[in-house]
Length: 383
Ligand code: GMT
Image 1 (tube, protein in one colour):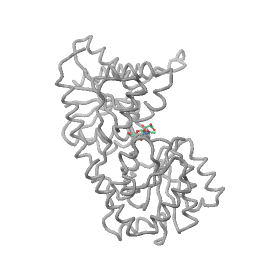
Image 2 (cartoon, rainbow, N blue to C red; image 1 turned 180 degrees about the horizontal axis):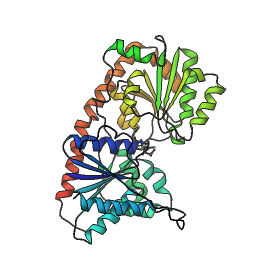
Image 3 (cartoon, protein in one colour; image 1 turned 45 degrees about the vertical axis):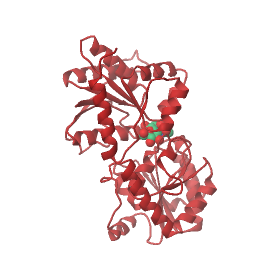
Image 4 (cartoon, rainbow, N blue to C red; image 1 turned 30 degrees about the horizontal axis):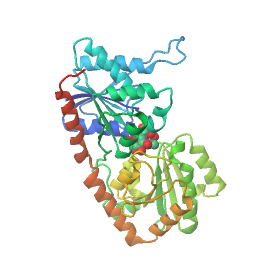
């Protein structure tokens, strides 16, 4: 198939999922066309069968708000026509599903069919989408999409309830390439790589996010502070965003800045995750929690919050431990206990990797997307 993919290309889980999906589909021989305002950051060097089409947005002085959604719709229609796309797949409903809807109509007027799939990821539904200024159009675009998928059952049910949507929404969970995200098998090699962050007797905790308030990165620092007072340990913080300075301030205030590594945005997180003993994901809300899945594939269990779709990913007590939002002391004490119990930690590490392989491996999830696409491409035109 020839598939157009639109996503937010910078840092964020939905962009990561869209990019990894494009890479996996291209590896299977599909032709993938990314249509976005900049090149998705995980693309570089892995782009055989992948094309990128930039969306130029003219900044005419009259425009206080340059209309990206319109420029995107125009570009989608052009790319679909010139490259004979079979369908579009847009990630994150706002504004991508609205632009796709316009592109579909533009092409219909020229006698061409262009079905589109909208994948719902999280705040497009739980936060931004519920804003009254967007709700009516998001609801309309979801309702009018040729196919809609959600990355968790939680998000599917929330969309149906909060938007009053009756159309079917297929749940296709996020996935991970278990060859790219994998533990370092050679213990000596792993120990050597860990030296970048910790002494041999120290534990390594890791947090990976876009440092937005919903991720509660400050809680991660608080959890670590308690762990660090109980055992030799280091915290690796991967990512950047609005709450980074609050986290840095707290680290200094608590006098633990020397034991926290602020790495900023990193491209090859698959090389960092396997170095850790434990992942911290104390989010206010996660519709899925892709960072925890990537960690699981690398044999790293999570201390996380029991929110949104997280319980669909993490089996409490088996592949991680779940707590209420803000239960910093409980999370820290659980981390201390787990890190101090080598046998239990190893069992959890093994189960985490096995679960990622058995339930969320790209080889299992990709066919679900391909089948979904095929059913839409083959469907009778009803609109
Ligand atoms: O909602 C966001 O935070 C943005 C979104 C993104 O684009 O990064 O994240 C959501 O999508 C990810 C990929 O499907 C999920 O793993 C995240 O759980 C989800 N975030 C939230 O629900 C807060």
